Amino acid sequence: MWKGSVFTQSSPGWTDSGNFTSLCPNGSRWVWEGLGECAQDGRDMASVCLGLLSIVCFMVSSLPQYYSSCKKGNMDSALSVWFLLLWLGGDSCNLIGSFLADQLPLQIYTAIYYVLADLLMLAMYTYYKMRHRVAHRRTVLNVVGISCVLGLTAGLAHCPGVDPEPEMIFSGFRSRSLLSTSDASSIQPFTPKEIVGFSIGSVSSVLYLCSRLPQMHRNFKRKSTEGVSYFLFALVILGNTTYGLSVLLKNPERGQSEKSYLVHHLPWLIGSLGTLSLDLIISVQFLIYRKAPVQNVNGSLGTDETAPLIPS
Image (cartoon, rainbow, N blue to C red):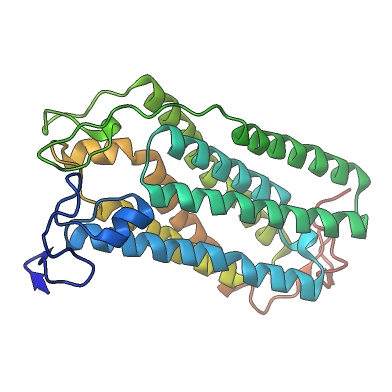
């Protein structure tokens, strides 16, 4: 049951003794054992639940686009390849940065799925692009770009592991060493490992923000969103919202100020909440162009299968 904002020991999922481990007293056992996080009160539990919800949203967000692409066979004309490449680049940097900067486990789990889903969508794009043979030179450029990004992802798999730094324990409470500090009113200095992770995370947020621009331009140029599944962006909006809230709701470690916590998570907050505004703009495009026919670049009207998107 609730006692203020803290679970009592009689609540489901909580131990009878109130201290099932010396590292996470009064914590939720399933969160500790399953996710590696210490959730001691309602705020922590809300963060975990929102994080899990964001993973579900992102897991199913690509399915409507897969279905639409298989049904209409025009994925290569509906989606911008730069939107997909920048999205994959952002997700790859997000995964590397999350690992190096010792972010929350849910952030790392979500980032892994991002990369896998992006690779599948890029594979489908390449399949339809090569099958339609719209522009051979553009196809070669796309394959080269995809190969470069895949090389970056493959390099991540061979990235040498870094031994975790010893964790600091405050009165039996587990804390991440990168986020622990003795002065709660100051921002903890960045370690060399965290500087690398923070920098890569910043690059990731920039790529996320830039990835929407090509798709917005593609929709504007075609005066149509035909072939693009709105549920892709709707679920991404919901996923980014819950993802950002899960990070914001997480309690800072003992001895760490709210300001220090936000600074250390800033790139990932910008990457999730920043793209939210751009996705809302794309949603407006869906409303504006929902009944508009596809317009060719020469001003004539045509179907989405025959309308060239970029002058050859």
